[in-house]
Amino acid sequence: KSKFEEWKARISEGKKSFAVLIDPDKIGNEQEAITIAKHCDANSVDWIFVGGSLLTRNNTKKVVESIKATTDIPVVLFPGDATQVCPSADILLFLSLVSGRNPEYLIGQHIKAAPIIKETELEVWPTAYILVESGKKTSVSYISNTEPIPSDKPEIASCTALASEMLGMKCVYLEAGSGAEHPVPEEMIRRVRKDMTLPLIVGGGIRSAEKAQQALIAGADMIVIGNAIEKNPGLMTEVSECILKMNRLDVHQ
Ligand code: 1GP
Image: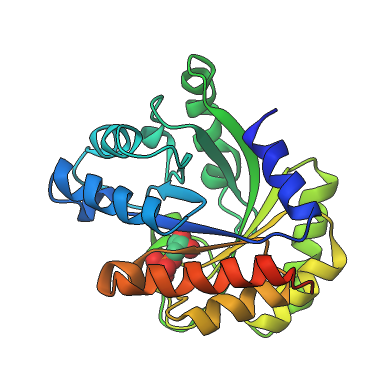
């Protein structure tokens, strides 16, 4: 069974999951990556995402390998471009930036990455990556040279997700952008959840267990937190406990 099928089975039981994003640029050395991986392991984190829209230090491989040597939590590549493919990870989010109209991030980088990915054993998840306006301009919007969907237009996000489902994508990622001022509005999450059936990942700007829970109750199947955990490692435990409790109580939307 693929990791994707396992995740879908969990979703069908009403279970939510928690991903922690590690930005390799912010990892000083291997020991630091090991420490974070141990912390994720101790807090029942379900997925470890690795990547970023702009990486300057070429250490993704080292970071992934340090995590893999420390924990069995699946490592999910969250690549900003074709240079971030790393065979030692488990899964690759093959992100198509469908909220934007920049062909380079809709299909261009994918063409460059495809033959490289083919040589690996990475499990590829074709993912509709939907960027949502979230206050100040985010790195991902600037680097990808794309305009996010206005945060008060849930219908546009919904139609984008629906079109992605019809195009054969396997999951949808609603993204406010790393370090976003505001996370994706609950109303938008609810609308996207209602109108399409694919597994839904939500991330960007989530800074508290309360916000994480709100996104999950609104319909996210998985939430992703990066920045806030870098600043406050204790948040990982809070969010994890909150999700474990939701899963025990079997909270449905
Ligand atoms: C970024 O959604 C992730 O792509 C996580 O964002 O770093 O703001 O938590 P944060």
